[in-house]
Length: 197
Image (tube, rainbow, N blue to C red; front, side, top):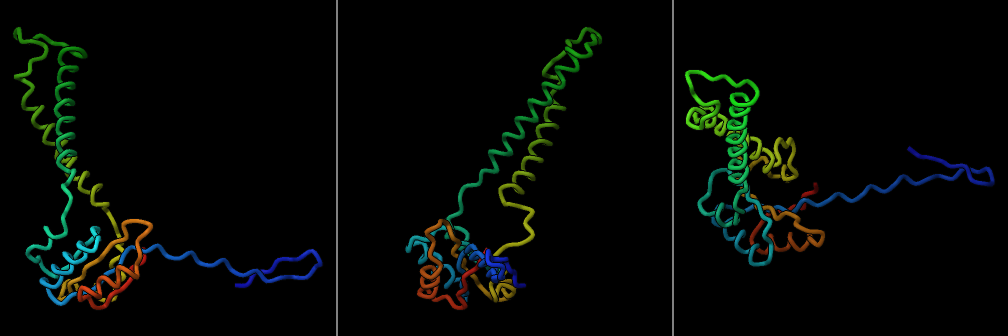
């Protein structure tokens, strides 16, 4: 749709529509024939300085997960912290209700005793740790995610059947898609495509 502006002399001039911003590059992906070629390509890409890699396979292929050099998960720290929060919450709640808010002396028992608090403390520790595990996993994995850029690859639909894909993800502003595509071709990749965000 053309737009016009009125100039100072009364005539109208056509305004060019704004140029679309270039799409941000997610990475470059290529297809490989079998798990052995994919594994060799992963190692070759790492030797060439690419470390933000992801592989998509129709079945679990031995050695690929370790070749991708996964980082140690922070989920354990989240679960431990949530469990300790559950322990503290349980003990504080039982102490507050039994010794401060509504103190009752029953058969000479103390208002708060650690021995009698163990069942509730255990239950809240497990409950908070379970919530920490579930919600921590969702947060660390960026879920729920209804879309992933890799699905733009023309052969991605065959990953569940017989296609092995390797993606080199853009890890900085200096990422050169053409250089990454050349690397994947040199490593034996076919159907090499640049993937936009």
